Image (cartoon, rainbow, N blue to C red; front, side, top):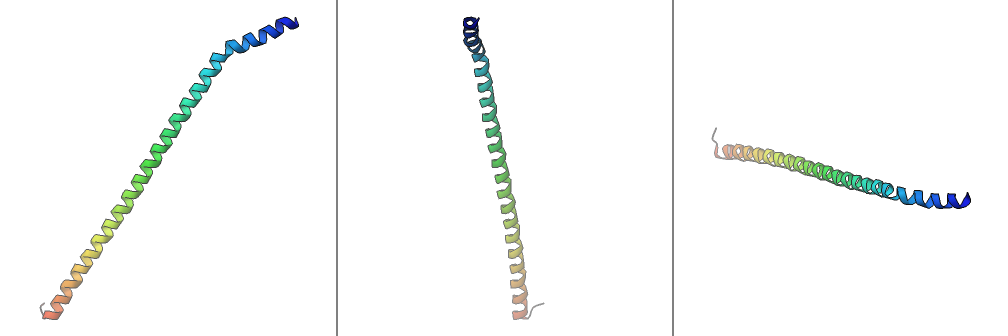
Length: 83
């Protein structure tokens, strides 16, 4: 009986080994896909943030330029006496 049990255990482990291997490979593949997806989402978020900052800076620059232009023309009119 003891001899039979000792033979059954290794045979059972050998039989289940491919199933365990497939499970590990499946888990590793899923982990790889999750990491790629997370990296992609992080990259998209960084790109969107950079675009938002760039758009804000562009708007601020245009507002400053417009205000400076108006100030320049107002000063020029005052100095030359034009209305």
